[in-house]
Length: 217
Length: 217
DNA sequence: CATTAATGGATACCGGCACTATCCACTATC
DNA sequence: GATAGTGGATAGTGCCGGTATCCATTAATG
Image 1: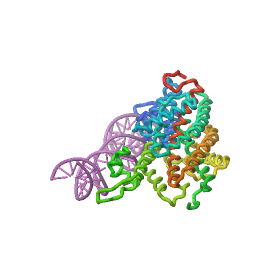
Image 2: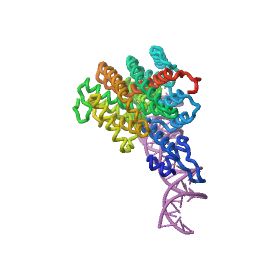
Image 3: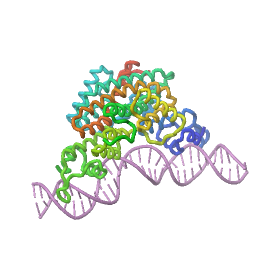
Image 4: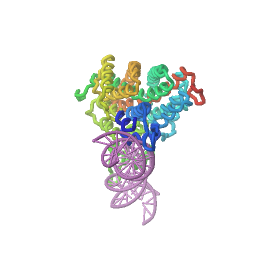
């Protein structure tokens, strides 16, 4: 398959495909002449993954390059790929490092030990959590931390399901890709579900229905 | 308080504050002369909220403007604010509208009725969910949909806690802000927790620990 | 076999976004 | 009265995902 067909099959413009190759997201086609190359189903699959990560997962091109490099490296242990896939999140790192941040880090450390999690507060996710909690405190919503255990419980359920899902993938390369998909797209899935459940929960409580065209107060 | 002090207290540069005022995120200070204005704690609080929504929540300036306009409008019913706060998510809307998308929409509709949710598939969150599921299917991960009920269960727990949290805010304006904070920052919190739980769950299953320096498979 | 279309590769350019810099006339403060 | 700070306006910056354009070469087509 040549680049035009790849473009037609995936809906990605040819110059964009070239751009992804330049950025290292997609391996180049195999050259058959000086200006001819062929692409196979692996390229097609990779290209769809890239678009899903971009459009649905909201990842940046450079982050995708990192994650895919980890995916392609057979030496890379699975949990490192997971780490690379996970580290994409979190706000911009202009931390204040004030009293709220310190308190938040303590809260996170307490949570980790309380739940007996096999992780460490150096985990980027823990840093992100601390940042979010610190922001919450600065906004006067420090009480929100009381929900942490409820959140953690739900997160455990989801994570358990995710890992079980990854586990039952047959081949290892499928597992690795499964980690990426589960981490990134799973987040989009859960986020959407949470928002839908919000509508439902507030409808139950306040009597407003979710469909538009409702009442005024 | 004048703009310089506001800047010092919040760590936001003066030109940036002016920019937020221009973009309608922050009300202008009250003019005392032609080129002097005073700002109060409400400005300070609002400014912190803006930064949290930007840095932690990953929202765009225009989205924040929409949400804050809804927050400031006392006529706006609560669930509409929630909608405005929630609609910020989801990928770019260049939908394919193919077989996968149709199947995904059916899956979403089934899920809504199965769980008896008071929402409709016109909900933007439902659209986002359908998009994510369609992407999953295109990647050959259609089986992921089997996790949907586990995800939904967890989402319900979280949403219930969120709504209960909002409910116990005393004043109404606090409730409204609580909705925004709970929706946006709550997502950051859950996302971080999920990634931490991933590490823990995969450690339990594969015997790899969260700290680096592990094994090969 | 001649013409047209497509390709790989390189470079330049584009629009959107979140600021940042500069300038101005004016005011507060020392 | 000198210096710093202010509101307001306009222009510029750096990054990011692409697009556009060009070239020499090769494939496809009548």
